[in-house]
Image (tube, rainbow, N blue to C red; front, side):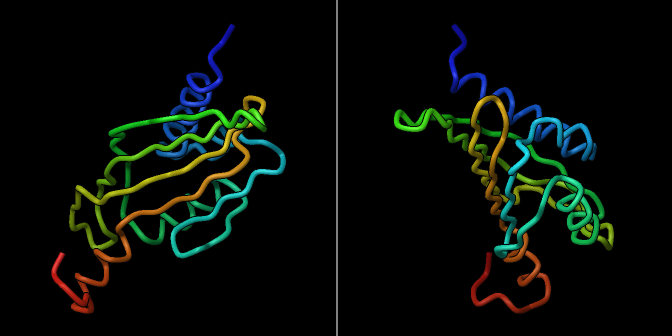
Length: 138
């Protein structure tokens, strides 16, 4: 018998790998029909093509360096919550490289498909700091 938490972690990491290429169509294969995405700032997106378009404006390019992927099964629903944490690295639109930009993505996996994800990272704080608008040094 397959461990639901281990399988959900595999699904999420495969989805993220496809999303970073970016391969929105390949990433979409891991999603449920009723998939919901909430991105940084509370932005609602319908899928990987939307987030890739957003990232294409915010970054010159960006990738994720996974540090941990943890999962826990909800005993009442059978859904699995997957927490993927790490650092973003890449370049801003002006070509300036960056690394160490913390992120956490929280997924819900049901019946082998991702039904939702919530995405947080430090990009907005870094951009505020670069613009001289941060309240305190990073």
